[in-house]
Image 1 (spheres, rainbow, N blue to C red):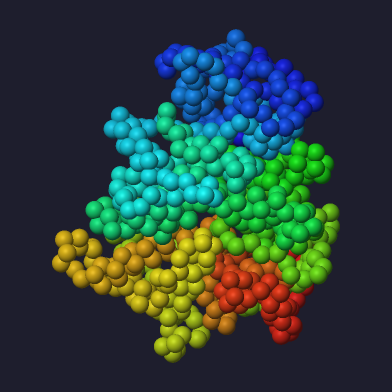
Image 2 (image 1 turned 90 degrees about the vertical axis):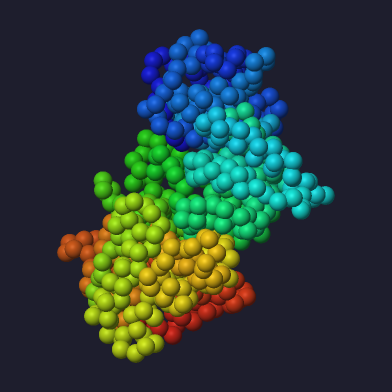
Length: 626
């Protein structure tokens, strides 16, 4: 839970049994001081007397005072603004707001209330999502026009789903306002996943509302807006500022709204299914969620785990050793959950969810911090767990399959750092130069780059094509425009500024456009990553911005995982023989775990994965990682 520690005397009476606090927001004019009172209610089922507020706390050092139970009480400026807009002028409103309804100075209460938050949001009359103010006066009218246009154009079908009423076109202004809305911090906050996903997917689309100032838009309508606006705006792209609007994440499917929406629908299916029929265990479900939302933000690293518990357990179901406890150090919490997921769920893929930020960390090198790159999560197909965790859970023992030994490392990808002005043309030119430098490096050091088939340019184009395909697959994007040799060639040639006055041909424009998109993809996705070449000529990028692979490090698979790991010999006297350096950007080139590639069933994939290890038995060794 995001922590905010107000000073002064406590305004919170202790909670008893199933009680929660509800705040009454007293009526007043917009510019009047904010006044609230707290009272206790028993939460034992759905209630119609309070609305749960989902929001981002904002900077905890920037506060304003409100009156709470007759005492001055500081709240963050974002919450103060929300309370100002939320209150009525003529009647009180009853709300549940975490920073007011939970005693933030009582660690024991915070621990206990985390497990109640699932029910708080599930049983509320509504969930209101505060996204902030309009901005300037001009922006206020843009927001009003866009919200009105979305509401007017939405039609509910017989299934209760909202869609666009055709054929009226979508204006550029509406799309830009909606894109601005989806870039607000709420859509990248870890806690909001649970706050929405505990609601009923089929029935509550109208009871989950987005608020901007005094305006509101239901979840159902916003979901419909982005299905059709993503398609209909394409002819209007030429009227926008070309250089500032295109990016590899331009599809709505790559933003936080779509990811939360997908998780909500999936959690609904889980709740509607018998426990014995679920395809994943609780550790595996947690691993899948952590993999999907690895880029979402938290203030406290422990909340990467705690914020998702409500999707796995009821308030009384969490095992004591896994219950939220903010008195435990971060490393202890991450280590305990990683051990649980590995030992009871065989979730080997979680080892790749590691940013390698080790400053101040005292846990083993294999313990993930559950950060890094979004990826598809896969759990082990073998009948029994392929790992052993030894020496008081400090050492991980697992079979490894050698792919190669690192021969030499190259220059970190620094395209964004070199593009000081953040100009798209400068990014393209710096990307071109970086790739040309990589070609020279590969030509000088790779042992298999003597033929045109294995030329440096061909190696790089194949690698980035695989990377772009993996990115599209992970983010559920269309892969119709695959990264090809032609696209790579378009990047490394001198890019001309796309001319929007019609003098360039459509083919030239399309080629330049995709070259720009691919340049941005490489610059952003590989920022800070280091390329390396193995002794067998294999090219890879280590997806760590901290650790750099070294000659002699081993690139390998770990049994039960789809990822490629880099191991290094541990210092003498260590508990184990290896330390974990990182993983590669791409998963194993065998790609046996991507079920929808060739229409293969889970059983077929598991058989193929088993055969992979059987055929390469001479390359398997026992990795003891500390």
